[in-house]
Image 1 (cartoon, rainbow, N blue to C red):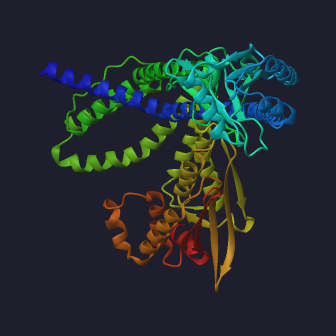
Image 2: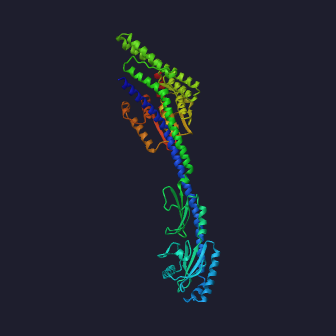
Length: 601
């Protein structure tokens, strides 16, 4: 049986320690969530900025390509419409004579001049359909004997008419021959018919091939890293040229793709960059964040263990002793060798149990009721004094250890209880209530690390007016919890009072205002509806509903006590604006305040 009790106690102790650890982790959870959110948001912003910069760079490069295309197209128009060149082509027949060689040499010289004018043109070729000769600045002239090649070039000239088209180097001309091999180029080429303004033109074809190296030089400065790649694609999605890391053809989820389309040529520039290169610095921040989170969790566990062993464990012992005593077991004794305030509490408990046992054992049964009454009376006198002395001991111990915040909180708590239990008084003046309330507010300011300030705007005429004890404390508590808890700084709590005539009567108005997040319209309407419903109910129903209500405990408490003490003329209003704050105001008839004061005096 003893082993069973021991296991139960150990299990209960473990639960307390686990709860303490859970509370600390819950405190850390908002900070962790905010840190992770900020980290992910920074990654998104970095990604968006990288995409924006890349789009601007690609747009600039596309403008450059458009200018190059326009220039080349203008050159091709000049060549295709050159009457002298077209006359030389048209007067040569299928018989390839020495005169034809001279004419073709003249044409070749003119084409060479055009190539030298534009550095983005690698070669210019003309296919003479009558003699099947391909004249090129790259290799001079060559007769095409293959009929499929001849047919392809003639068909290309016929399809284009006076228009322009672009042909890739890998475009198939025959089953075993590409356009690049036939024309001697390794990149895209512009093709169009010669003799533009002659409706009876021959099927002569102009071919202007671009300089691949020069085009790549436009793209290379856009590469952000050596692992990225840039591709120039035509309107069909075929890759015209590509530079950078070209090992991987398909886009993966770990890569960023940014594209930009040209309105002129309908070509597209696409940049692909590994995302890990973008997030290199943020990944280091992520590692630091996870490290801090891990350290915080370890510290939370250590702190919970320290608090449990230093505070919770002795209090748990005292709680178990009190439960045994409440069940009538008079042989309770708590072993503890602590010399601090908790040790003093346990020692006092042991003495109290011994004294109680002595009183019960040394008096007759018929005097038990009387002694019980006497003990309760003595307890009501001893407990406050015992509480004050204990809090004073904790205060001076904190001062000795230079724990200024703890000592100030204990001092304010001691003053708060001292005024709360002040000779059983139920009514205090507004000035006394503000002093009493300030002790509670100061405790909350220390708890929230002075993230909010308090202003008292108390009218001099209202300071001496008596009001019910602890009437304002629930309103201030709501303002701090719901209005100040989410603020890191800049919170303001304003408590004001004044005397105002409403109708034929004078009222004392007391308001509690905060600059917190405020309420939604739905929440504000719900609270006002509940107060209106309570105002229309009778007094017994207000107390009977306590087991059914699930929220608004503080407001219900204040409203109920106001109606019980000051009658139906007392009232409470709530004003709230989302993002600005909330104001709760209570209205008490002045004559009822004076009546209650005279009744308790």
